[in-house]
Image 1 (cartoon, one colour):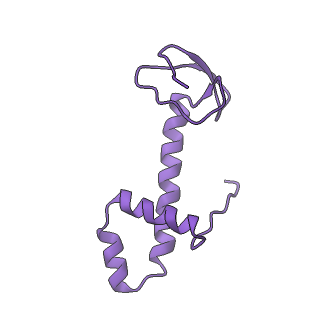
Image 2 (cartoon, one colour; image 1 turned 135 degrees about the vertical axis):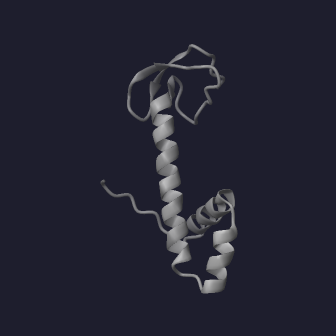
Length: 98
């Protein structure tokens, strides 16, 4: 679905009605839904926090040599490793209340 600037959508995260802006990126949502600007920022922060937790969980199980190798990797590579570990069941994601 192509989103035009100025289209009105319901935020699938917070439920508010919002108007799209220049550079708005379409999300995988049902027709008429998207993610508002505020929620997009919140999601990015939460995603980063969860990846960081995954990196620390993996790091804690490594020997010193592999910890050094992991520490030298950039964020994108660490993120890819965490996501692959989740896909393969090496790490498990638990949803809990804050």
